[in-house]
Amino acid sequence: MSGTTTTKAPAGATAGGTAARPGSGGGAGHRLMAGSVGRNMGLVIALVLLCIAGIVTAGDRFADIDNVLTILRLASVIGVVSIGMTFVIIGGGIDLSVGALVALSSVWASTLATQQMAADTHWIVMVGSALLVGTIAGLVNGVVIAYGKLAAFIATLAMLAAARGLAEIISDRRTQIVQDQSFIRFFSGDVLGVPTLVIVFALVAVAGWVLLNRTTFGRRTFAVGGNAEAARLAGIRVQRHTVLLYALSGFCCGIAAVLIMARTTTGSATHGNLYELDAIAAVVIGGTLLIGGRGTIVGTVLGVIIFTTLGNVFTLNNLSSSAQAVARGVIIVAAVLLQQRLATGGFRLRPPRSTTPAGGAAAPGGPAGAVSGGSGTAGGPAGDRPGGPVATP
Image 1 (cartoon, rainbow, N blue to C red):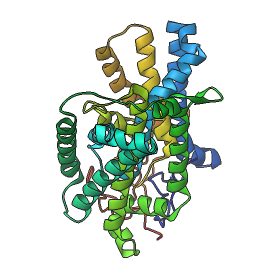
Image 2 (cartoon, rainbow, N blue to C red):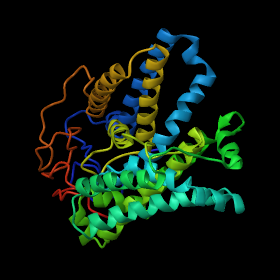
Image 3 (tube, rainbow, N blue to C red):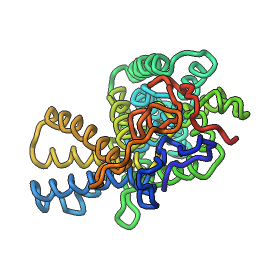
């Protein structure tokens, strides 16, 4: 699975900034490694090394199947949030409100009124409430950013504060207990030994991959994130698409709220604390460019599993959360460097001949990607990068 898009890039460049450099020995193997396969291979190597470290330090406690399922169960909530974040970042934006939206959705879905409605009808009412609250909040984010012309960073930061505060008001800063046993039994169960939470995460990841790589919506997301102005000239309604991206992120937060309610049997204003940082970190080490236009769902899933496995290894070895935070920072840098080396053929014994990418100063695999002729504003939402991918509506 890869995050490719239909683009019209300048000669010698490919979508997402993995340019084929003339004279660089660019055979099929190099092109393969320069694509999403090479980037994901770096993540797989990092995950394997982490598992080896876990087996060496924790032995059977780490390799036990129950521990593996625990890792996947813990990864499911932040994994669903990260899938939605992947779409937003590929589209050239950022969403800092995801953690607060998870909290707000969980609180709203676990109020006495909602639970009474669920008791009178079906627990699906609680699920619907969480999804609706998350989606509406995401829509508000999208409208403010797309039509209010507010920077995504500021708009979602404001939503973070507002949603967290609203969750505290609704819950009166108390933890709300989920009373519906049918809801708890359904989501705490398993299918053939695989926890329901993990199955939901897998379904969301597969649906996200199909949406990103096999639909017009996905191609437009790459186009908007790569070059918003070119996408507009190609006939894409950029503002409406931006709103949909943030609504999708909010919808994923609603799903994550349901999962965390099932896992903890509570709804609380403290749920999802710092999820925004975890999700962005997982998306970035998964190979998605923060400036938009390139990314993969597979990379994001691997990034989430790497972070969750890292936490599990530290917990089994009784190491502090502070040491874990330091290790997270190191692994982000190591994973990104490893991806860059693999993507640019940096492990070859013979160095590539010096070449200049067509029309551009950016080096392939660099932070800005190989955007020929590109001089986009780093971090800017859907920045206009001359020579970037041109949309195919």
